[in-house]
Length: 569
Image (cartoon, rainbow, N blue to C red; front, side, top):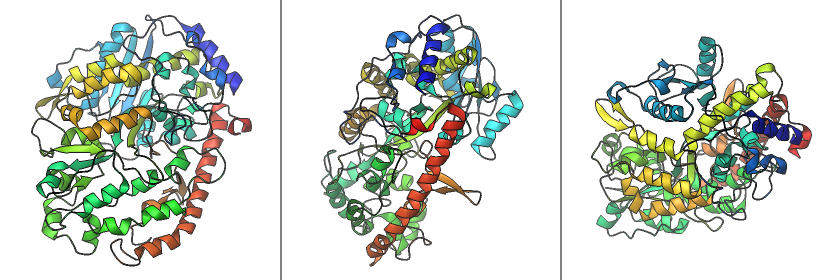
C-alpha cells in the first residue's frame, strides 16, 4: 500500500504546472486529537494522532512541495450527476450565458456558476451536468442509467451511499492528493467520516450541523428560564419539563441521537473503531443511565404523549403531524429534527414555515460521559475511480491525469472561497421568485478561509439571524474544534443485506419505539425495565451485523484498491 501511494504522488508531481485560483486555505486549525472529538481516526481502521486522512502511511502525507497543480491550459471533459435539478443534461455549462430567469433548479444554478468561474482559470475544460429532479428507482440505478446513456459513469457525483460506491469499486481514493494544501485545509473531523483504512472515498457536497432548535419566545412568555448554550442533559430535562402539555410541549420526540453521542459506547466507538472487537456497547452502564431519562422526557414530548392519547387530534392535524410545523407554529420549546431547515427558520424575510419568534440553535447537551457536541447531516460526493477502468487498481499516468482533473473541480466545488461567492451571486427562478443558488451548507475548510466563507454564508437573508445567536456561535466553536459526533448513514458501513433487503446494523436500537420491538410505550410504567432487558441481545445482533458490513468493506478495498491484510493491521 505504501509503495502504491508514493508512486501515485510521484505521478501527481509529474503531470503539470499551474495554480488553482480561488482554492484557498492554509494548513487549517484542528480540534485537539486528545479531545473526545479528536480528528485523528477514520470511519474504519486505526490511525496515528494528528493524521488528517487516517492513513498510517506517513509517506502519503508528503510535503506540500510534492503537489503540483494543474496546467491552466489542460483540456478535459467532466460530467456531473446530482439531484435538486430539472432532469436535463447540459453540455459545457461553464461556457453558456444563461439568464437567471431561465434557470429553474438550485443545483443547475449552483454548478453553472461554479463552472463559469472555474473555466476562467481552466478554459479548455468542458463541464457537463445532469441534475435530477424526480426519479424512479434507487440512486444507484440512476448511476447505471447515466452509464447506459453516456457510455461511462459520471466523473463526479452526489451519492446516497458512499459505502456502496466503494464496495462496487466506483469511488476513487483521493488520499493520493493528500500533499495538496487545499486537501490539507479541509476539516479533518469531517474528512475521516469518509475515510476507510486510509482510503479517502469522498468529499462533502452538503453538510449542516445537527443540534437542537430552541423557541426562546415561547419559554419567556411562560416564565421559563432558557438555559445557556453550555448546557447539560439535566438542564434540558428541566427545561422541557416546564411545558404545560396542553397549549405547548417540551419537545417533539425523544432525542435518541443524544444518547448515541452522549456516551463513548455508541458513536464514539463507531468512529474510533480500530478494525477489531465490537463497534458498539448498547448494554453499558452509561447507556442505561441515559436511557433512564427517557420516561421523564416522555412526559413532555408530543409523540410519546400522543401514543397514550395525551395530544388533542385537532392539534396534531393543525400541525400536520410534523415536528417542523409544531416548531414553526410555536407549539414546542425544542425541536431536535430537520437540521436542514436552518435557512427556513432563521430567514429574515417573511416566508411560510419561518420561525418568526426569537430562536436559536443549541448544541447537543453535555452528559456525565461526554461534553457538548454537534451532529452532522452529510451528503457526500465521489470522484470516479479511473484506476479500475483497465481492471488494475494501480493508477497509470493517463488515469492519474483524469483523476486529478476531476479532483481539482471537486475540491474547487467544496473548498473554494471563490466558488462559495459564485453560488451566492448566482440567482435562479424558484417558482417565479429569483433566489440565490447558495444553500445552507457550511464551509468545509478550516482556518482563515473558514472565516471568510462564513462571512459569505452570513450575508444571506436565510442566515443573517444566526450570526448573533449565542447557541449557534457555540455550535460553530464545536464544529471548528471537530466535536462532531455522527456516523452518517450515507458514509458509515452500517447496513447489510438480509433476504435481499437492506437491514440497519442498529435496527432494534434505532427503532426501539416500534411495536415489534417493545410492548410497553415510552410513557408507560415498565418501559425502562423492558428495554434494559433487551439490550444484551440487541447489542449482540448489532455487532454481528457491523462485523459483516466491515468485512464487505475490507473485501472491496482488497478487490478494487490494492489493499492487503497488512493494511488492516
